[in-house]
Length: 123
Image 1: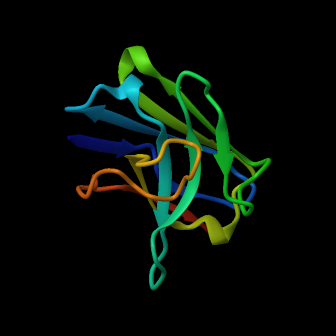
Image 2: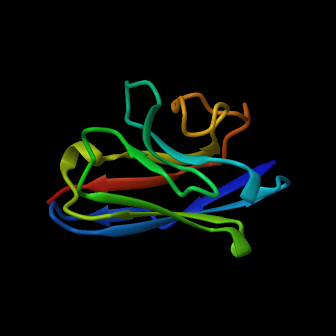
C-alpha cells in the first residue's frame, strides 16, 4: 500500500487549501478513509473520516464547519478542502484507511504512512 499526500503549503490565517491523497496497492473503494495530522511535539490525531458507500463523514470538533472530506473512487484519491484556516491547523497531514470503518474512527488500518504534506498557517 502507498499513500501520496500533496497540496500543502504556507497560507495566511483565514485562507484555504485543498489536500489530495493518492492511494495505490489497495482496493480504495472498499475502505473508509481518513485524514490525520501531526503537529510538532504532538501525537498524530484524526482530522476527518469518510465512509463508502455511505459517504458518511466524521470530523474532529476543531475542524467541523471548516474542513470537508471527499473522495473520488475512480481516481483512488481522497481530498480535504480546508477553509478558514487557523494557526493551530499547522501540521503535517497524512491519509490512511480506517481499521473499523466509520463506526469507530481513529484507528488507522495500515502501519505504513506516506510522507505527508506540510500545512503552515501563519501571517
